[in-house]
Length: 156
Image 1 (cartoon, rainbow, N blue to C red):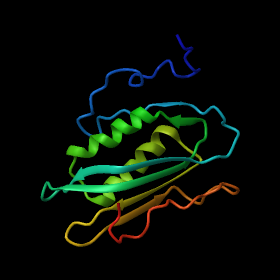
Image 2: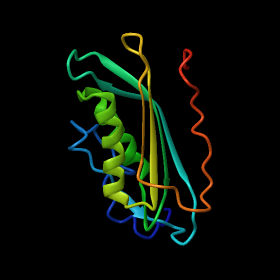
Image 3: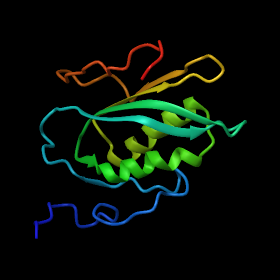
Image 4: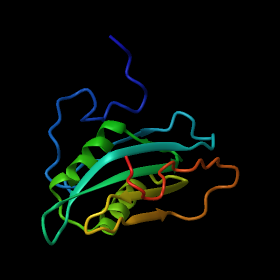
């Protein structure tokens, strides 16, 4: 049996059968100690199939989310992030609210040195909406690759 990494004892979702949370508010974002807390580096999560619902019509909305962060003492556990993002499937909110809420929850859970999110929403009604948020200026010396999502011309 593999040895558990230090600081992972309290994880409740990783390695367990876990149901999708009923809502983003009910989702638990779990963190573990950053294995390299003195090192400045970037972590990227890409969710090309993010889904939520229009709060007015109930129609599905789809986005390609790109989350970049420079960790401090904690990193987010990826299964808990996947479940959190999946909890938006039946959640009604505007694109702007979904994108910024994801950022706010991650910042609250991890307290990273820096975080940015790009929400590249697919068009409904003929208009794609892209939503960008960052917690402040990027730390000096942090390599920031392009998020890699082209302007809308039939993404996919």
